[in-house]
Length: 156
Image (cartoon, rainbow, N blue to C red; front, side, top):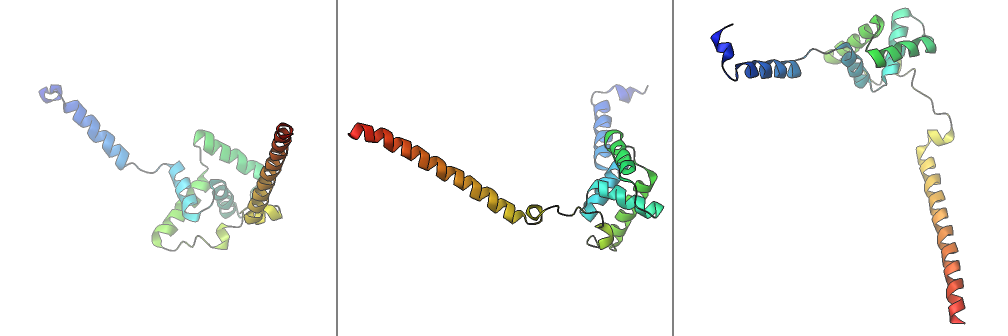
């Protein structure tokens, strides 16, 4: 052991240097690559799994198989090679300026609205606000009727 290592602050300096270096200059983990790719496309991570399966195997994957792999990714950080490869390609396309995130090939698994209310959220908001106002008006009318009834007894 060198005498300089025993000096106060020397080990702290090394610790801080290695900590800051690892914090600011860390390499992206595989999980970060999937999150980054989904962010670049404005889609969910599960859709990255769907798109990557189709790109790798040439057909749509079974939902059960994709869900099993997605749960492994969420719980254990295990990412299949086809997802990692697809995600890295998306990031490379983005860096080269060739990525069109609005391309239909990236949005083929987007969820379709199931009802008129989900299709038009303004209609749902209108119905909720109108219902809330109707409840308030009914409460005010009932309260005022009971209050007038009580006050009317005192006026007689």
